Amino acid sequence: MKTYNVITNYNPRPILHAYELEQVEFDSLEDYELDSSFVYYKGMRFNIDEFFLIGGNDYWTASCHLTNTAGVVIHLQDDCESVVLGLLT
Image: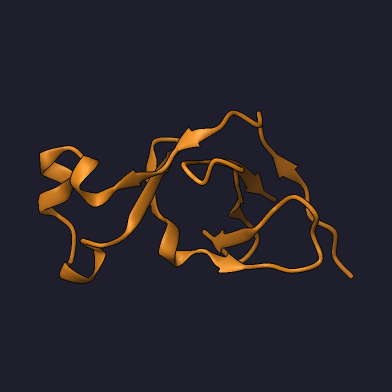
């Protein structure tokens, strides 16, 4: 079984709703994304709906693959208003 490394600083990042985005970014959303939540990580905007739940991990909740060998993992904070993200390598 392959093991993965996660690089993170464990800083919580706020979850943003579509209406909280800058006007330019809001205008670029598809209709189905208007009810979505977003988070910024490493200069990129991620739609939380695009993350897949992962099991068997006590901390990381879900992941989103960027390439075949890298991705982003997410941990929902107890307040449900922020998340911790990490780079999966």
